Image (cartoon, one colour):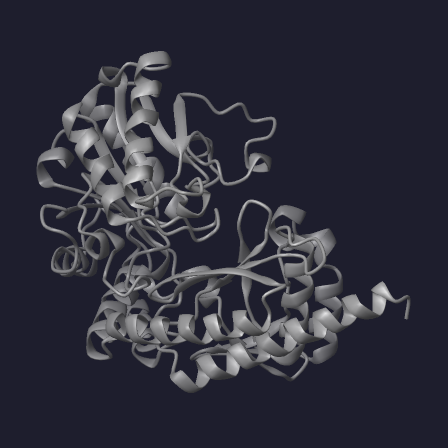
Length: 444
């Protein structure tokens, strides 16, 4: 394709694609991806610290994954599973059993994280015969109507849609502990228990609650990392009332936190798990995961799929797991994440008027941005910084209720040198932003 054809088509994008699909940030025109890099239509190479929003954990177009896709396409392109059966979906289930927490050993494969969440909630309601769900304020679980019942990261996702059937309590945030508290962890755990007691006393009886669902690390809501004690208390409350616990590990899974899953990182095992994103290095695949005992209560016809567990996607997932094990990507995420956070803390000392806080677990890192004049969270400041960083050659993404948290999620193959390179470009972008603000302040 000629440069003219590409540019001409890109200019027509507003007429071709819905704004809700085409208008995300930064809308970078690219022609190729490889490893930790995108190659732009402008001829520049961009270091990618988004991984396609925590998807390409093995890097873009890993050779083993690409080869697996090619070989799979020579045999099968489409299922549908159940009507026919094929080896890649069965082998993938067997391999996933070896990396998931014990007893999470039976799978319903779908295409996206949202579908995995829909399956998890349907399974919980079906087996408990209870109608209601409890979720946490700030969590993101998808945008389909069922998932919207429990998604509260931003009110705009729910506007005009009137989702029903769920109740919310606050997600933990240690930064919001009152001053003078001796033990912040004990405080938030005690508050959690009181929040549940108040919910059960005033809004919904626990014997009507099918499940409690949450992200074990808050993702789109701002990269908030809970204490393991807080997650254990949720597990305890669910057990007390025979409520199923669902972990949304769509973003935290497949090595992102430095372990295969956040459940293992924090030592808390849910009854049901939703997994997706990093599962197949960019091909659409997800799964609702539970024990065989739970899944047997979900009979034929109660749920279904046409494209879920696609044979090519399953082959890509098998190659993804192989690469992750061979290249020890969970361990690399742990080491590189610790290194990146330390570098960011040093950067924060230089930019105390812009970087409010640093939060990280593995290579799931949040950089909270504030306005250097008001010292309040600022989505506008963040967007300008990201634009300047992109001009320098590195791509970051955003999260947080006010869009004020930089989401740093590089591929798990990232090296120390690439971390240094990406953070240097971010440092330069923040410096440029501050200089711009100074010029505006003096009217230049």
